Amino acid sequence: MSSKENIVPTTKNVSVNNTKPYGSIVLTLQNCLLPEEKLITTPSRLDGLDAETEIDLRIYGCELIQTAGILLKLPQVAMATSQVLFQRFYYSKSLVRHDMEITAMGCVCLSSKIEEAPRRIRDVINVFNHIKQVANQKTIQPVILDQNYVALKNQVIKSERRVLKELGFCVHVKHPHKIIVMYLQVLGYEKNRALMQKCWNYMNDSLRSDVFLRHHPETIACACVYLGARELQLPLPSQPPWFALFKVKESAIRDVCKCILRLYSRPRINSEQLEKKVEELRRKFEEARSKARGDAEGHTPSPPLPKHHNAWGGFISRSGTHAVPERAKSPKRSKSSSNASGSVQRSEETKHNKRKKHSSRSRSRSHSRSRTRKTKKTHRHRSGIKNGDIDQVREFLEKKNINVNEKIDGRTLLHYAADYGQNEVLRYLLDKGADADATDKHGITSLLSAIWEGHAGCVKLLLEKGAKQDGLTPDGKTYLDAAEKDEIKNLLRDRH
Image (cartoon, rainbow, N blue to C red; front, side, top):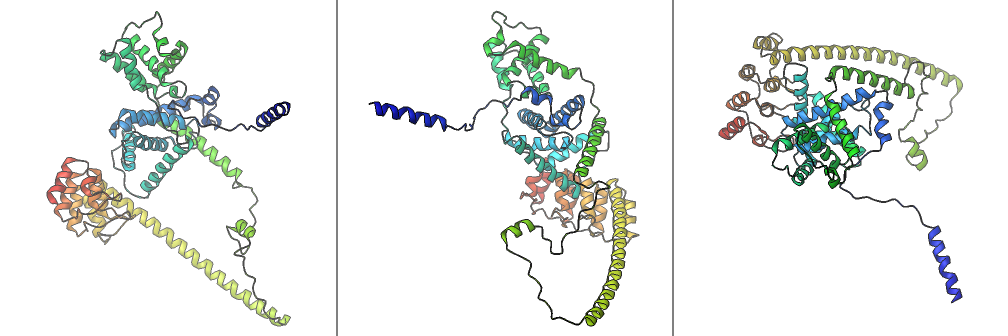
């Protein structure tokens, strides 16, 4: 017995000493809350952005998301999810390094998928462009499907992926909407529509602050109920306190109420001033980064690459494969012959280099002149078509002797007329022999451009001139499915 008793404790000691502090996986439906130190020292402030400007940028971004969601006819839960993801992301990344507007577009696209109400990236870009034009009191113009649009679309896609990556794909958000309804039922105010609407209004306004990163949704729901009841002067149970029933502390409710009420006392946001501040900091950041990389002036140039340089040099040298074969040694020649041949060779190389420099200069001049002519040509034809000036378009075509089907920036004149909804210009171009079925560099026809932009008159005219409607959109939809207006759908059905 004594030997067994001695063996058991030694086994236990070995197991205790060899235990390792393994990590753990927590599965929860609760919202992710941040500690106070993370909320104070944000990445934006570390990049030199002051606290007030950061708060204004967060509020402005959430307002953009809310307005865009209304225009896109998204459910309120999708808009709320988008704003929470937006707030979370900028506690991980800086507003100076990542454009606020593009991130807002990415959050809208992401939240629409999360809440099972997806919207096309093209629609999101169009809506944000419309909001910006209205805010700046500019003429409302559609987004042209050119290289700038393609670049912006790729930026939005990358932004959506970046948000997912930074949040670790933890995009679940628990909202207080249903909790507010449940709490009002417990308090006996479920039939009071005015109180319920007030609570929801306060809750939607709270999305512009960071309370969803500080408190749980139950606390936010209690704070909204308290503010709504106080404004409507409705009594709440005090003996015992009503919030104790929902396991919420009074100090937390006061903190949420202060955060919400603070929003109403802030001055009106000037978006242009905010953009200037961020742009200045972004420029300083880019200069500092370029200096760190050694691209600033006064830096000694890096040594030239070896003759047989390979970008995979590190990997190739370690693996020992794909080595550059040595040249076969030529038979020895006399010094006199080698010197003579060397001088002849050097003179020939000098002549060749002079010719090469001269030809490269002439090519660069011709390329710059062609680019300038192309830019002027693009500006003239776009301004004429955009304003519906047929005389300017006629002068552009006839006096310059330009083919009506010539592509400028990858698109025909008919595409631009369909984009801007200019029926008279469209009719003139078709009468001049414009191809109604011609595609641009993205494979889009003029008819599809008019359908996407909602110009029913242009769609009718193109169909009358024999434009084919049996094509498909880049994402595989038929023209009928791509149409959003009922008037355009009826035109397509009648001509089908």
